[in-house]
Length: 223
Length: 414
Image 1 (cartoon, each protein chain N blue to C red):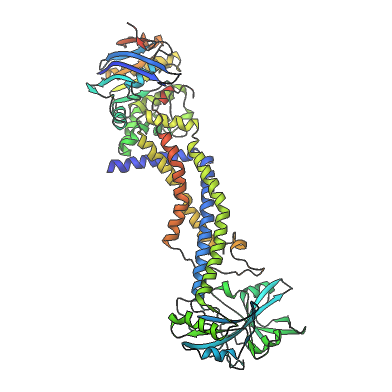
Image 2 (cartoon, one colour; image 1 turned 120 degrees about the vertical axis):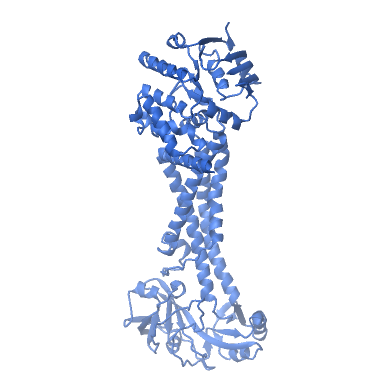
């Protein structure tokens, strides 16, 4: 369970370019549910997602994860939580060019120092589950858009997180691939994972597997 | 601990793959870095070894050399001064020497001519009686003899020449060499042997000649020699004996061994120093390049760091990665540069720096230095090269590592 209490996020505070991305957002995200944060561009979806995923800190307010206040934790602890709790799927696959798909998928696990054989097996299993095991040794620049997206999903799952965060995951996918993505999300739900997605794609927020849609506009939740 | 080691292995693996992904940039940096280390190491190895070599050769050189000075210039030394020196308390022996230079206009080289001393010395009348074997017969294992003759006998009308001269004139044992004497007559000397010295540094341009031939060639009377060497019983009294010589023979100029060693030291320190000053500009350029390389992170590199942090790498992990990157580049450059410099100085005779470090005339000594390297030298080199690189890159690395993890989420272009 993730709880946000009066969360505010201000960029460039004190400067003439000061900009308030989130204004007193309070939200409760339940476990084992698919929650979609919906809203137009600039509504604060990505900012909210990055705060939920411990990637940035709110300017004010509190964030609780499983009842534990995490807002004031030092970076090292926050990173540890991020690494073990969250799996990130970005708008772009954000894979590192020049290295293989397998290496890209294993990257989030490097700081944990897991044994290479175990890690490799885990990565290969993940790639096989999404039908791209045959691309394991390929460089990422040789992948198609759909393959790259799936590789980034395997990477998000490598540390076996229980919360999956996806930022506009279908923005660069065609309809067929978007449906395929939603099928994958369904399997996550079936495995008991919590999924938080930002999107303004009807294919996502109108999907039957979505449990809750939160509307955002101008940094606030629309009721 | 196992996790920590495994983590370091992963980070090093990733660092290596990162370096290989930016081949051109990193190979350029590595090549420049290696060149800097190579230049500094070569200069350092060369000057250190040559000073060490010179000090070993001079270790058993005369404690005091006495010359005669007229109007501030070196003049021929009257043989009757020898008795005055012998009478000074503390003097063990006095030995006279005949030596000089001969300019060979044919090849534009200057030779050093020397009449080898005997066991004992010149008689007071200057007559030589001995045959040459090894000049420095009292050499210890630590000290190198000035030259070795391999049993060649120096008889009137013959010469024994150094390797440099043999090479330059393309002559050897049995050949004849003409000389223009002081009175315009041509004297032909037969080569009786070639010096086979371990240290060609001092014997390359050396020519051993019989005393009578020497006097005939330069027109020096029997009552004069070039200078004398003085052995002193108690090494602690060398300075005292030198001052007594000066007192009793006001025209004499005693030179003690330490002064010669100091001169050698300063010559090679000066030459080495000049090299380093010249190349310090290159070092500076390198530091600027390194700073630029580390601080001017490309958009791709920044994005990569953003991704790593977004997927769970800590700032310290990124710093570790950059640390390994720096360590791999600087240590590779350091060891490659040092090894290349070692080969350059001790196997190829400093072929690149020969004109700047070795030459005095057209007759370059072709010698192989004995490798002398100590830990202090390598440490100095390490601090001159690896540390400036590390310092130049530490701030940019820290700045790169603190990129916000959510920058990966904000990135929308591929």
